[in-house]
Picture 1: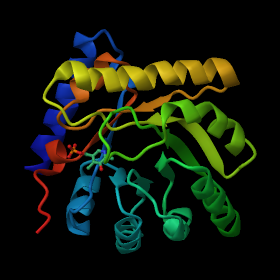
Picture 2 (picture 1 turned 135 degrees about the vertical axis):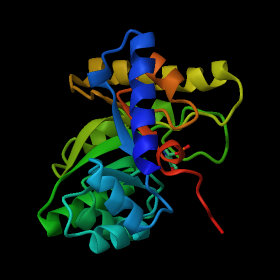
Picture 3 (picture 1 turned 120 degrees about the vertical axis):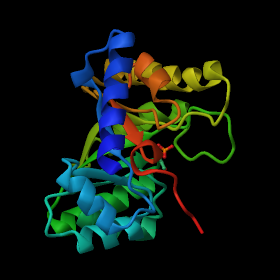
Length: 228
Ligand SMILES: *Cc1c(COP(=O)(O)O)cnc(C)c1O
């Protein structure tokens, strides 16, 4: 089951890249394993998946500890409370939900204590929904300047969650907004900022069309999540 779903997703992503004139090698998939138990992740690792996205620091920590014998990388993709920065500093290889200065400063302090550094993406709010977290686009350039000196955070680019809409135009606008912002940031800073983490199970085709370099895919790989 899992094997077939992984193969299907990778084939669909490749087809989507070709359809939109993108090099399939330029788009990678981050499997999102939130809510799925360690046994399923161990199984996925046997099928070649070694990097997993989790949206809660506590869950990331528990899985990293349970699977410490495997060569896995853990990526935080959900809102991080400052008082949980320690878990990320200890166990994550990357954070894609960096969205405010006090979090960046706390993470930097914690990472220094651990003697580690991690990759980081700035999460940008590109939708008009009130509930979505992320930094307002107009604050991003200043924020990049403010975190330049934090050597433990290797800034690689940007992440966004598109608006939850049935209208592909609305969804695509969110992705386009992130791509335009990234271009603006590259020109203003001279930094590479090559990563655009955008697109999930339901909307990755549109994200690929708008230049995504990383798709965060949960349910299409692992199946429907059970929150009960
Ligand atoms: C859960 C989650 C995903 C994956 O969602 P699916 O629709 O299951 O692919 C992607 N990004 C973030 C930030 C998430 O929390």
